[in-house]
Length: 114
Length: 113
Image (tube, rainbow over all chains, first blue to last red; front, side, top):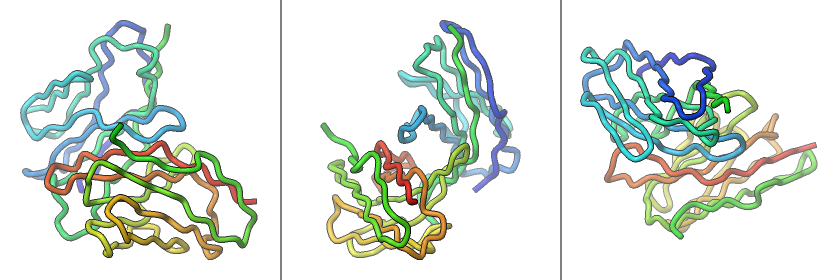
């Protein structure tokens, strides 16, 4: 799986858009970008994933650069309940014989300020 | 409600005792996973299973054992051989026909003294 780099922490004002960056310069052509988040003392929650096109769902938008070396997760109107650790993960969509699990780094601790 | 349940939420054991953590899912997912999380760290894969009666070691399997006798259930035993068992344990499942979207349970916080 390609390695990802995320800032350790970020602040955002309530009601504003939160933009979380992720660098994945070694991503290969068929690896997807996945985003999960983990609210304190709970299990991680899937947010969104994409390959090369921008994606949007009810939770967030994912913007992937044209060279696919970085991406940004956008929470359009952040609320206090969006305070969590956000993980960016890059991997193949289907298991290929190796360890079939997700590799979670330390992620970005997003703090939404009232 | 469909989902993954883990019980109990908090578990306390004395050193030297084996302890089994429960994980049940009613999502009809074939694949199930166990992860360990230490404070301020990401998740590390302990074991995974893609089908009933089959499972594979993850990155940190030493001191742990699992079974997969039913599709819905994937219990994890933390044995006395695990040198540092105090941690937050997370179970997850996935539809193997889809992409790598995993659904996680609420976790069990194990404290061994």
